[in-house]
Figure 1 (cartoon, helix red, strand yellow):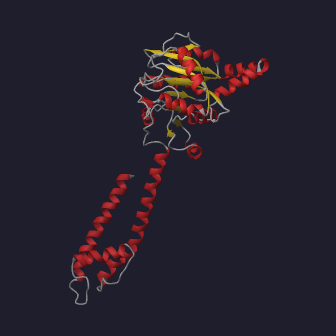
Figure 2 (cartoon, helix red, strand yellow):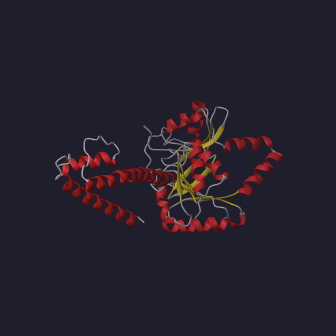
Figure 3 (spheres, helix red, strand yellow):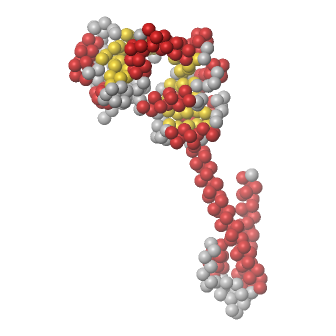
Length: 356
């Protein structure tokens, strides 16, 4: 199709060049002609094709008038072609941009593969926590709706089939913090994970299973975090039955804190310039409670990529660079802690730079 269009354009240019030469030859020989040379002819063609028509240049011979008629009629077609071509090009650019073919520069973001109401709720929570999200989906009709609900600076969409792994570099997958595989059934999730791991062995995955019995299978496939909707829902419902206040408190902690009345469990990485690096856990616990009103409830030790969660660790446990401290805090306290630690909430890469 493209080659055929180029041939038509080449043929049109050749025709115009020939008519241009003929016009000069027939007009310059007439005594009343105002088109005496190629410059005059070029000006006449230009104002004719652009539909300006100053009237200062015009053919007087019969052959010249015939050629002029060709220019007059074809000018409408050329203008229409140019307008259509520009419009098509702009629309193609917008469509390619909407479909994510230009790629994204997001880093330490979350990639969500598959879109539904559950993924939408997860995205809302991630954006509230200040994380960027790249979404891979195979339904083009959903793209505009998602961009209407979420800002482009925080959300990037790639339209692709889920088995077209060669498209996935466009979501900057190597710099992603986590991949949340949210496909309709567990079999599709497992196949997609195995396909991705062939090219991205270091990728970290999270899945929410429909069938709890497959948890061991997914963990064997290298999935970092395997959850079950049924297990989570069952535990929360049971908790509401026999300890409703605890269940309500837990439910509040699972959502992101936005105001002083909202509480959240957050973790922050200890960088080299952190004021608590080198201190004991008991010192951190006392100071965070006294100075900032935050309750320190645990920490995470990271060695060789393995994360060891310490729930209420011994008082003498040292806080080292690279550890994560876990707090219960409200929405007003969160910005203060992020500024104190000079790092955003959540898991961050090893090469992250302190905030200025």
